[in-house]
Structure formats: C-alpha cells, structure tokens
Amino acid sequence: MKKKRYFGRGAMFLLCAVFAILFLLPTVLTITNSFMSESEINANYGMIFSTTTGGYVSKTVNLKFIPDKVTLSQYVTGLIKSPEYLLKLWNSIFLVVPIVIFQVAVAAVAAYSFTRWRGKIRSGIFFFYVILMLMPYQVTLVPNYLVSDWLGILNKPWAIILPGIFAPFSVFLLTKFMRRIPYSLIEAAKVDGAGEWQIFTKICLPQCRSALYSIAILVFIDYWNMVEQPLILLQDADSQPLSVFLSNINSGEIGLAFAMATVYMIPSLLLFLHGEEYLVEGIANSGSVKG
Image 1 (spheres, rainbow, N blue to C red):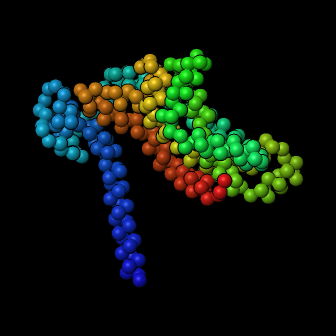
Image 2: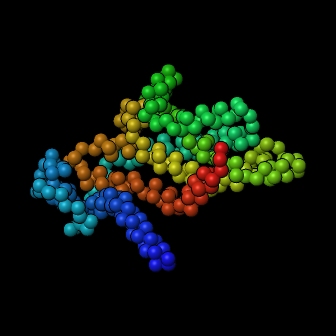
Image 3: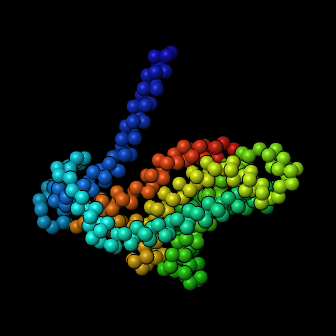
C-alpha cells in the first residue's frame, strides 16, 4: 500500500511539474527573448515574423532560451528613447490603481451590508450579483458603451474606472468570507456599545485581511491585462493603456514588444509573489461557507 501511495504521489508530482513548465514556458521565452537583438529574433522565429525586413529569416521556428549575445537595446529604446511606452505604462497605472482601491472599498461596505442584513430582499439582490458575476464582460461591453455615451464620459478614463469600481466579483467573494466571522464577536461588540461603523472597522475588516488582499491581487491582474474595454471605450490612442499598445504592436518591433511585455509583467509578478499566501487563504476560506 505504501509503495502504491508513494508511486501515486510521485506520478502526481511529475504531472504537476510538467504542467508548471508548460505554463511558465511563454513567460520564460518572453523574458529571455527581450535580451535578444532584432536580427537574432528573426533568425530564431523564422516564418512567424516573415514580414520583417532586413536580416536573415529562416523557414523554421527555433525556440531559444539563451541569447547568443545579451543586449539591453530593447529596454533602452522602450524606457528612454521612446516616451510613448512610458506614457502608456502610466496610463495603465492611472486606470488600474483607482479601480483596485475603490472596488475593494465598495466591496467591503456592500459585503458587510449583505452579511448583516437578513431577508428575502437581501437574498434576491445577492442572487442578482451572482448572475452579473457569471456574465463575461463582453456581454456588458455594449451596455457600458451606451451608458458611458449617455453620461458623456466616453473616451475618458471614467468610462473604464466607474464600471470597474462597481464590479460584482469582489462583493461576492468578500461576502462569502465575512459570513465566516463568528456572530458572537459581533454580539459581544454590540454589548460593549459598539455601533455598526465600529463593528465594521474594528471587527469585520481585520478578520477579512487575507480576503481583501486576495481580492486586490485578482482585481489588479484582471484590469492590468485588459484589452477589450479600453479598445472600445477609449478610442483615443494616447489615453489607452500599454496592454492595448502591446497587442497592436507591428511585427517590425518584436524585440521591443518582448522587452516592454517583460516590464509590464513585473508589477503583477511582484504583487502575486508578495501576497501568494493571502491569495490562497482568502480564496480557500471564502469558498468554504455556503451562501
């Protein structure tokens, strides 16, 4: 029995390792290729970028992890010589940071209301939130466009920020987490004379620290990589984030695209690595209680 158990664990570990390598492969290739010259990229990837001019272009694809000659020219061009890339990066920051901060704030207040308020009306509204969460954003993109046009905020950052602030996913996840808080703590606080605001700030929020952190990470990664929303709601290219710019980059700047994609991955990777424990704990605990 022990041999079978060890064999099963070994096979599962090997399978997980294979999937981990497959998932990490595009990220590793992006980082290593960002240190290659344009001519080396053309020589390695051949027909994929056959429309590029100049240099040797092979007819086969050669996935290469180690550059023949390490160069930082792509980073120098993207971060110093071409201000448009930094402008797009700042556009991403100005769009995503307010969404993360205010979505978490709105979700905390709404989740506390759903937790403390009991009744059929509350259940109906929460069910409506779940339905909205299950809808992909492509479904709500046209209504968002029409509402933004009616409010006069089309082609402005508010067209992205306002729908992001009131997204239902954070409310759902945080509500599930708040219901784990023992009601005896709230009753004890009420006996001591605490009001609703004190219960919310002194009891509920400290208990939901891991959930708040996990929500912030998920929201940041989601909106940091958005393409469709700014592409439709922000028709002015100067106000669009770097994610849109990278998706539209021409084939003659593939090396530059690799470099800026690497730079663009750094905030998400750092945030995930810093809050990995909170992310796992928040998601696991929020899903352990029935709504």
